[in-house]
Length: 150
Picture (tube, rainbow, N blue to C red):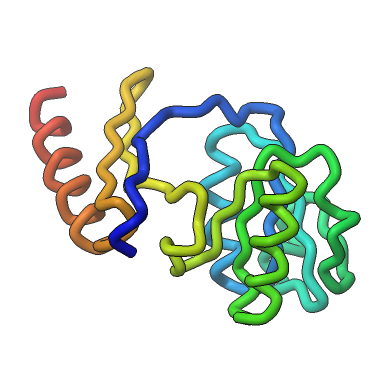
């Protein structure tokens, strides 16, 4: 992954269409994070877990097809299927949809940092996609420090 060098940015995803491919717990975890930012999240999967079904969000129980990419800003693939992820990555790049392949930063156009938000202040800690747990640990240290000063 030496060729990746992610730029930490903040992007307004409120009311933006975001597609998650996959219907399991990884997809549900990503869904919960995206909901905090008022994105228009939709799920596409052959099998969708009960938590997603009960979330009130739109989901499509169908196999992935490139036709579903229309009008999305970004896509998170939580499929856990290497062959499908390769196809999704290729299709997203062709269709100019930003792509994130879960737990595969070398295949991503963007990675999500560990975020702490307090009011209008956000602190994001990123490890260039290489050490998620260290990013979370440092984010938590910052969170603990900031909470002491409230």
